[in-house]
Length: 105
Image (cartoon, rainbow, N blue to C red; front, side):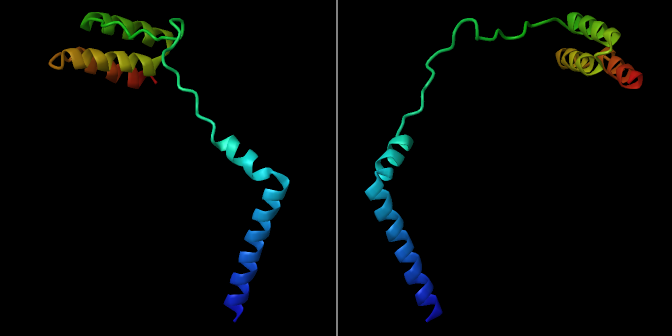
């Protein structure tokens, strides 16, 4: 019986809310707000386009890493050494420089 009373009071509450929304005109405004299409960006402005990073050589990545390490930017230096390592995995230089950068921290 209690469950039936709860269900009936819930139905009455929902119907009362719907009737109130229809009487005040809230319902059409509600659906108009959510029926808006999102803006779709077809292309970006040339100023906003990002250029891909340049393809550097093994030695350029090592030199850039050395410069960044000298400036104290150790995380960026390690990233450059890792890129150099990916270009020439057989060379021990990037791994040694990564190790020295970690010990410098």
